[in-house]
Length: 399
Image 1 (spheres, rainbow, N blue to C red):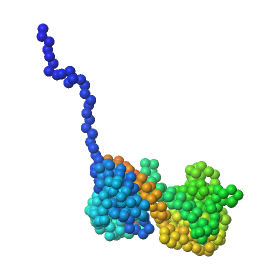
Image 2 (image 1 turned 180 degrees about the vertical axis):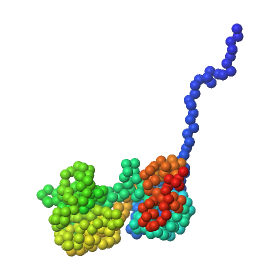
Image 3 (image 1 turned 90 degrees about the horizontal axis):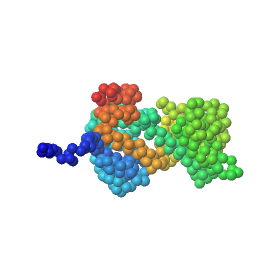
Image 4 (image 1 turned 90 degrees about the vertical axis):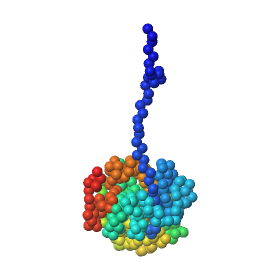
């Protein structure tokens, strides 16, 4: 009997790997980074390394010439990383996504293309109704990076900048105390046989905790005051050191201030920081003592505090040197820029990988929390209530 020959070859009968089609959702984005023009603002949102990560993923980054100069990043570093450099400000603001540190001015909003995405700080209490009306008229989708939450429920941008401000407060105090800066010539401590510097920290939040860590690291004696026992306990646990802590008992605070060499104001409130040290208390402090009022961004913790600038940062009252510069992180612009870049870059890549903004918002509740305008419609109740503007539920706008 003749053997039947199969119409299929042996190779064709062997099982083959199943091929699964993978949908590539990566959407190429055009990101514009304009130069910061706000007073004293020296930071930039993305470092050259971050730009390299974005351009290597197929995205376009357009940077205004000189945007990184004040953060010690040269235009050549950005162009070598794949960015396009331009002197045309309007072209940068015409990009699909605009990335800024400070919120745009009304003049800058006029240059924004309709239906663009804006990611910047909002600084709600410093805004006005016209700002939101201008963005709404352009149907802009806007995120406030200080409102964006991490997976653990914290606000990463606020935490990072607070850590910088707290650490910087001690470094600044150390500089001011130098005799060459008309201080009292004291070092912070850790010198054998020399009594350590006495530091009072008012506020046990992130700023206060970072200040405490830095002061202890330099060998100072610290006393921390806060009305929240939970915050004081958390600070001690996080630092891993037992130290002097107290609630805001006036007598205890007064005694500490009279003996201290440095006082740090690190409190905040709903509308403004509470004034916890009055003028009479400042008058009784030691001549040459230094006050660093980090809370000046919200009005200040000391009654004697007055706004100063990075160019003229200090003034003297009752023999006490006051440093009351808002936006302390901008003083360390490169460190702050790296810190912000570390936050922005993953979110930008996430938006692209998710296949667009809407998908990313659906998947990430923390990012969704930072949204305050969606195609010109206000979606944040705080903004709505503060400026008496209509607000819509984002869940009803995104299907």
